[in-house]
Image (cartoon, rainbow, N blue to C red; front, side):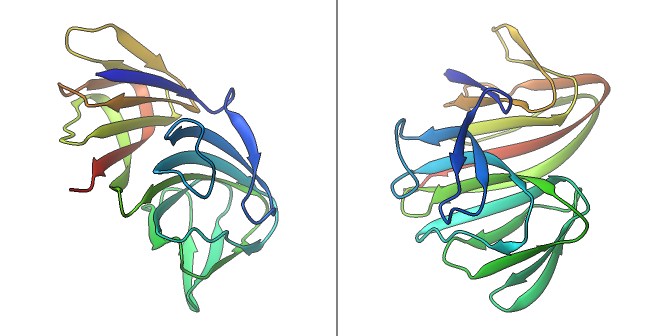
Length: 195
């Protein structure tokens, strides 16, 4: 099992594909891939102005709001709203999406997979106490939006995570135990290779 630590505060800052802002790239595969040829990508962004989303042909996207008042979206001409605490919005990279800030800047969390090679699920998890995390995935993502959080892997050291930090577990062999003494808000991603 390969374990990769993620930290929003240390991650590479990159311009958006459409040039409308900047993104904090937490992880990308394969290593060294760019926005045209990645297999999967995990990122956070600070959105300070309204405008269109970048398009990513052949890619599935999940988008969650981390903070701010929210976004009013037009998704292929249909109105949608996205607020912190809402389930992640799932849409295709080809979709026509534009966003209006509700009341000031927001931060978001974005998981993307190229559908010819990968598929994914992203969920929010409010944790109080201890929980074993089932996965059955090729890659398991644990991202701490608010912590602290301890991730215990059977037969391995414990990992302490705080706000903006995470773990990527590739080919996890056992189910991790998550624990917090004060409560934690997490995003759990599961990535599966396409057959």
